[in-house]
Image 1: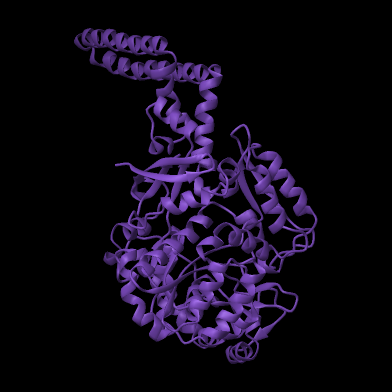
Image 2 (image 1 turned 90 degrees about the vertical axis):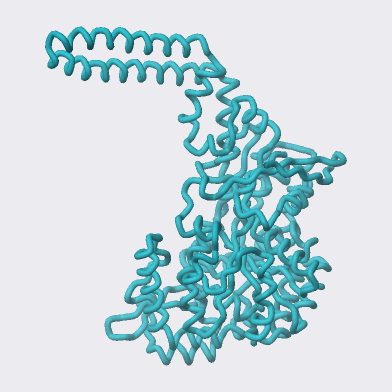
Length: 560
């Protein structure tokens, strides 16, 4: 069933249609995620506060408000200052003021601070939270959308690059790595240098030149500037794109937020042996129930990282003597010493992936969190950390998921009677049918006729040989398989050559696969939103807003 949506556009109005594809039909999805999308309440063992849909999160608001103890004024002072630095709109500042009120909750999402905002799903995550807030407000609840920019993460290689489609429809990767960037430094502490100007120029030279290109270049030059911190540049761009919807951006490196998180740090340190134990048992339970293990928890695991004086983020590991050492061996602590440092100097710590959500929901009155499939799977494990630390488990909902199909690619799909699922097996799988049915039906028919005739004559020969000597018939069966194999191989060579020779069709089909499944993954995991902003203008963000339907738990295919 298709959903039709009308939207304003630079040239007046436009409309697009949307289809939904169940995640069970999308390759590469984990069993746990697919079952959670289908019926989250059936997994209540792993998700104690799971809700059937976004409409049910309102029922959690009294519990959320009752358990939120962080000082809202300190929180909002920090949020106001950082969002003003990010170029906050009045809508965002109004939401921060609303968050100061004791009966306001937050709907949260977050993502690593990627180059030029990272993959498309960064925008989809934020927009999911925005739409959920709009739903709560329409029912009379006070709520604000908050985006947690994961600036504490130190895997810079992962966030230093992004991809767009170039003017020929090929995938092009952009990368920026400042000269003084080094391993283990949180992304939020990395400063851009002059090379970012060249990366912006490279991006704009890669993208097709459109009526919107100058506006997009000005936007990037205003946000991704030399000497700005990487996380700040990310936040500024996201704020420019989504600020009209009142999105609040949170950078967890702020010292005031670290101070608010100190009680959770201290408690997690003192209870770390118990946390490690329950996480390992939960992992075993997941595997026993037929699901994949999540975060690996070794005997030496510790749920926080140590922030060194030089800014680097270092894993803490339990030694055989029961002390805790930094990864490089330069520091060693007892458990109580770590707890004392966390009370006195919380900026020396940052949470691991299994503790991050608990810290986040201690700082914020979180009604729910919108995450991706991997985050949903992590929550099955980290729910145990909530329990150990005496916190109510926040329900997680899957963010909206889209594949954007531009009109030229929609025409190609229609021309060859294909849909998105037909692309999942790759171009080599789709190519034979395209050749046989659309390019050279004469030769394809001839191959089929020859194969049929060979089989007919071999059947006649088989009958005759069986009467004379069954062993000869067995020998024929072996040779038949070889004959059919070689004929099939010849047919495959013909199909590939025919496809290669028809350059127009090959280009249409290959660019279709590149646009919809770049790098053999869903589009949202590779492409950057700037490609679509360059093609359709900043109004494309409003199109995404209109396309979000939180009642739809499938992958939404948007035909422009």
